[in-house]
Image (cartoon, rainbow over all chains, first blue to last red; front, top):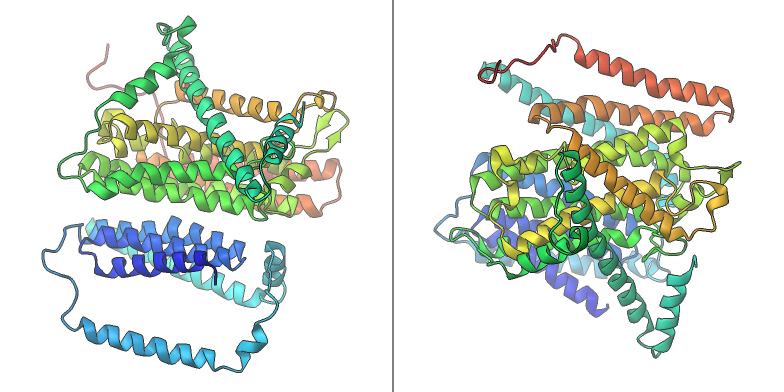
Length: 166
Length: 388
């Protein structure tokens, strides 16, 4: 665990907390973008270049912008005057901590963990591409089909609204 | 001469104690990138004003220094000493951060461009992906600038810019996918090496193949749109929304936006050169004695001149034209181009391959163009108030 990991972890957790607790929705969305970028940094620290850059491209470049669009096109960006935390937030923190402890304990006591440690796996883009086109070609096609279906669904929803408007 | 900068860097790094050598090497690369491209920015602002002036039958700046050559310095001093005004209702933190979020990524992406033989600042296995990923962060900056200013014109400009950048990113990335397929690598250095051979005296650049030519044209159109250059400068359309998303920026922050936009244009032109125009390789085999970095920057200046020329020639698009062009015309052509690249890869080389691939490029272009024009009447434009 290098000091960079802790700095990055602090960035991710801090911006994630900000994304949940800030009053202005657009500020929340921008903090979420910082969280996405921090996660990409975490992937890069794990020597996963492709996943890291794909994370930036998809999440910072597209998903964050999509969220921002959705906020601006629906609710507007007014700041709510009162605190947005619900009164039972302490319960939420307690349950989250409990879940973390349980899952962390389960992972640490797993028999598989010592087997995975040892050599650091490295995956070049070429290897990822080869695997996607040979071993994992069926899941890839299924994902493609799913995305196409959702795209067509989105277009149909948008078109119907337009006809009603006329 | 070819390796003079690389050797200079090695000599400078060698002077330092070994503990700081990696840091010093990185620092020198960063300083070189910032210095060279910022200098090029100053040169380009002058070139653009001069060139546009000539196209519009006027002189352009000619007061400061001989032939107006010192105009960029005067501009720089002016923007440095101007008052920095932040609107009272603006979101101070986001308003302050927006120019930084723009300038940092556009300089970062320059690191993977090989500006000469052995002259990429960072050799990344995933160079092209890095370029597009980090370049995508500029979209966030545009939104931050437009939203935080609390000005409806700036918000409109930001929305236009975002819609445009997201739409044109698709043809841009899909047209570069062909090159990645052919080179079999995402590394920019590998891609340039794949184009470094010669057929007789002619270079094996990707642009001299049917799929490469189509890809290059699509890429440059997408690049003009990504860097908000005319004819895709709707986000800052002066006649409608004053200056778009940076309307509320003044002084040095405005200069940073200006710088970011130009550096972004250099970066994407540099990627176009790397992907399609052979990077630093010479255009004819007997010209290889000229240093590689001269070729790269020569090509870059040529592309910048094309951008200026286009800006002086074409009128601005309308929003619906912009979207239709991206989604109905460029996206299908980019997808077909990927198929053509695959065909080119697996067909035996020869005239038949050329003919089939060229036909597949030209055919869809004509058919799609005809189909999209169907049912529309374009006659002489009539003006309501300015007639006769």
